[in-house]
Image (cartoon, rainbow, N blue to C red):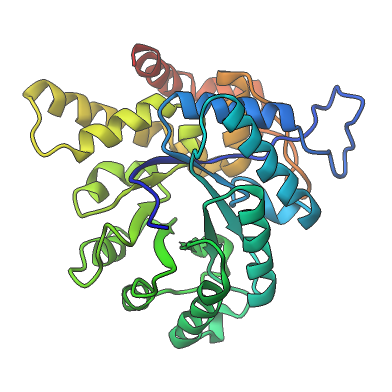
Length: 326
């Protein structure tokens, strides 16, 4: 299978049973498959290119392995039933063991995922050499039944380093078809996405930050895997479309600049509050799930509740105006 198509992908949150439900357990609330399916179908119909399931935003490390396949299979069934057959699903992994990672990728394939997104192992980051990272990913890719993307998120991986040269090496493996870079170093992203030794159609580079979308698309990035697209999908899709065009009218150039500005301002809520901020926004703006629906050790929604949400009203209202117009 080839690389995922270019576009905007959503790293979807995992929805848990509502606090008011009879099934709620404050320690480990069970999965809410109905809400999960409804949100996924909403995103597919809004123009989102595909979903990343069980990534960082999906609280993968808070979910028992036995629930992974059920969650993926439920989404595949719901999307097929909604008239979205073969809709792209990318399954995340976040383990440090080659064997366990491959096991999760095999389960993901059986559940209907077409790709895996594999977090760089970071437990021993201070003493992990680049050649060790290359060998680890080659071992996973050699055994994986589905193509994989390298997921580089230093903030959750003990600040592990992966150099552009390492990405160039990994891009030559036929079963490694892309990467997601969730950090603010645009120079490093450019050194990967613009590298003439890397075929961008075979190895797709995605940013994890919508704040970077316009500049990084200009250097060869294939799009974004962005949490805010879970509640402003049409706006992010529109920004990607405008960023990908070679020729634009003066009006479209102005629209693109304003849209990137508003997206960058809005995404500060994700930068500051992470998963709780994303879940609260999806709940308040789109009506999916509880606004404080995380699993331990995460707890609650936005610190300050309604008062903190009110601080973001102007920024979010500007985005909502654009979203509704699309």
